[in-house]
Length: 192
Image (tube, rainbow, N blue to C red; front, side, top):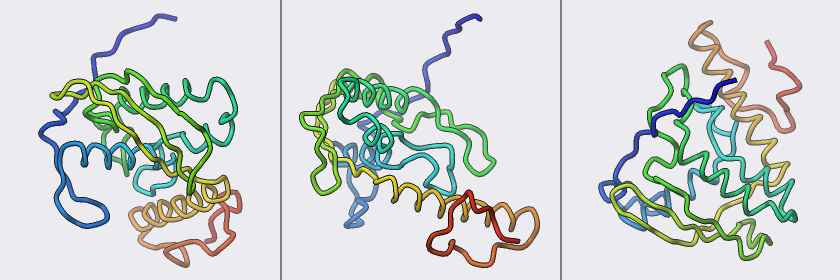
């Protein structure tokens, strides 16, 4: 087996990015925009968004399985490194993105979790990043952590919606409803 370095993923300068606040609809930029983007990327578990079933973060699973481990903080850092380095997977049949999900993080310098206890279902962590076009930035993040039951429900709903899109595009028909009935699980299979 040979190891081969891949070129750095493309990045966007943090200082040039702006977007809409997800709660107020106002335009935001700078630190407010960065915080919102970090939280949105890190809170979205894999398999819970129908348009990108492969993308997302593993933080909720890491929390559930390893929160009491001495390795937890280090594994959270590894997850942030993964999201800052590896280009996002293809969405709905499109090509793979040139950009990683954390598209303006050049390097994850540090992650600290002062207390792994959830407060209002949120995990608080302190991060130290090198941002493209900005330099070193430290900040506090508050990330929603899904329970295993909530993860199961969200993944079932996303799988149902993705299957609906696939059927509409390929067969010109859809499942009996736009969302699954309560209690439906992907292991139950899709109805005809």
